[in-house]
Image 1 (cartoon, rainbow, N blue to C red):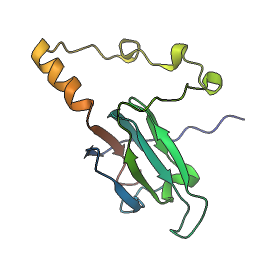
Image 2 (tube, rainbow, N blue to C red; image 1 turned 90 degrees about the horizontal axis):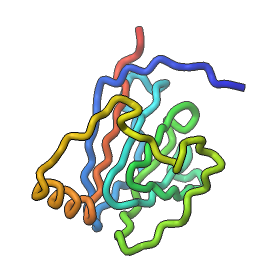
Image 3 (cartoon, rainbow, N blue to C red; image 1 turned 180 degrees about the vertical axis):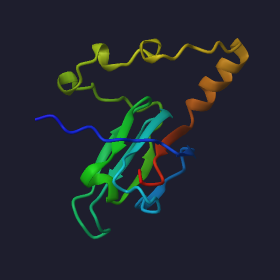
Amino acid sequence: EEAEPISFAPTASIVNFYTTKSLMGGHRDDLEFAIDKPIVSISVGLPAIFLLGGKSKDEEPVVPILVRPGDVMCMGGDSRMNYHGMARLLPSSVAMPEVDGSCCPLKDHKVNLKDVGFSRTLLDQEDEDALRSFLSEHRININVRQVYTDD
């Protein structure tokens, strides 16, 4: 059965920068008026362990989720008000397990950005090298959310 589409008009974005020593403790994103709308998040740089808990800090289980570079996460519906946090970045030396493609119909489990309207901005070699170096030791998470209700 297909889920009914919802309206979603992002009005705010938060950018989180993480180093290998960073973490974000368990919290809920509960200050928006539109808590019935999802939070959509994309991460680049080092992989991380994201923790998804329950409706209270005492509720178990707390589920660890491996978030790879380029992963998109959507917290909506019943999970929207769950406690969550970022436990730890994983160094680039850690081998990542293979992706189980049974849930993803995309070829090679990747989206070609040109297919969704993005074109590559060319960086000069020095800037591209600096970006690669930075992302090999850090993680950037960008999330968008709708703050106000549709009314």
